[in-house]
Image (cartoon, rainbow, N blue to C red; front, side, top):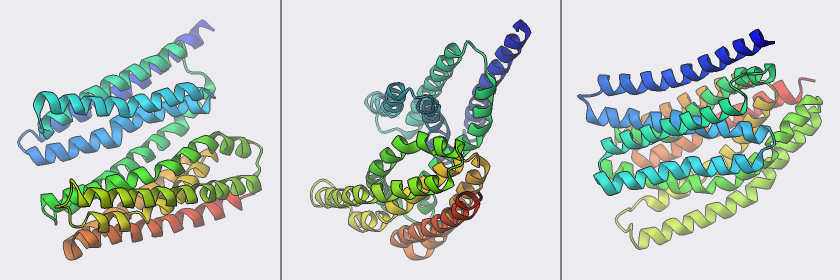
Length: 337
């Protein structure tokens, strides 16, 4: 028993060391390799922050959700974005609108938060992994990669269109995309509530119930999402006629990108089903395909049709990838039994 516990402690230490090592190597390599290219340093720094550090912090909280610790999950889920927002505010107060200092301060703050969350998990488990926790880790690595790819895909469109549009138009597009992201919150909130139920139905091989729950979740989220879309469009209109009067295309971007809300709601539901049915690698493949499709379509359309074309291309690409999600889940999950 002692030898087994010792081996588990070693395994736990190696996993934590690996995670921290990846973060350290990524930070050092990025800093050294891009020291002479300010814009590229900022771009990759934003991707690391938005696509790796803070998403991993959020994914750790899912362990609390899966374990039934709803209160802890909600607390951590609030702490992660609040930390990023707070550090961003302090960075602006101390260093002003300097993106390099923002990348460094928010990135370092995120790494420290990640270390704290990992240490909390280590203390809770006695620095030892059980067989169940090892299985969750095995299944969770692809899930974490999915989150990183999704987070990167959600932000890299603004970087890709910056190669074709000027900085101001890129900023207007980014503001529109950010407003639309708030309209996705109702659907994601419903998804979080039903998330553990997917696992219960999967464990009992209730494919019919799994399919019913997935589409019920989508249908329940759509009306709330449409209300959020209307409120978002109204907010964009108010902003455009007041403090953002120079953002001529803001309303157009918000109106077009709002179509992403129901499409991504379906993707989230289908993705949760894939993960619950132990098909995390399939979800990783679909997420990667969706990211490549979106990036290719947005980059191509932005260079020819400008920002509005890029927004339309983003919607079309997500519609295609959503269709692929639905087809795959219907064929490989709901009809597999």
